[in-house]
Image (cartoon, rainbow, N blue to C red):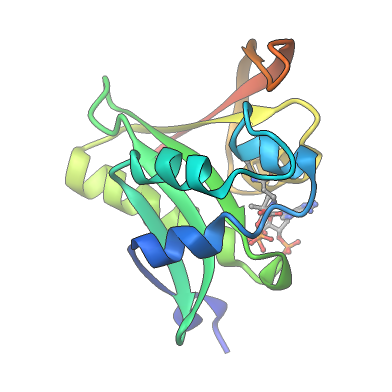
Length: 162
Ligand SMILES: CC(C)(COP(=O)(O)OP(=O)(O)OC[C@H]1O[C@@H](n2cnc3c(N)ncnc32)[C@H](O)[C@@H]1OP(=O)(O)O)[C@@H](O)C(=O)NCCC(=O)NCCS
């Protein structure tokens, strides 16, 4: 069975966001999505943060929500950004993120005439780096972001022409 046909994309609801914030399995994973987050998580703060991103999308399989990402600054000089990408830990390595990023790329290209996709990836997040590399993203350079303690952490800008 073609894995691409198993999933559907739709806009995230508040119920979806309540589910998504339960997915990070460790402080490290939580901060890949929310660099300033405290551990244990503060659900209301995380919900508020995600709800403020207008273009949040989820991937579903029947009635289960399996993956989440936001699409932002899609009209910013042709470069559309993907943020907050996360897949339900029980649905990883099943093509969910590949489906999601491919679908968001189509939206950015067709709806916003974007010519490039981009994301920020923590330098120590090898799984995410490998994931984006598998989709053809390359490393444009690095910068620093401040973490929950206010300390600088290295992140890569990963980009792909579309
Ligand atoms: C990174 C993440 C989004 C990948 O989601 P996923 O749905 O499991 O990824 P996919 O199944 O679509 O993987 C597609 C390809 O990416 C690569 N890949 C994905 N996860 C990988 C991993 N852990 N290690 C190495 N390569 C990986 C593989 O090439 C994979 O193809 P294959 O399974 O046929 O070998 C998921 O592990 C996750 O939610 N991590 C925690 C949150 C996070 O780090 N988000 C990224 C912020 S930048």
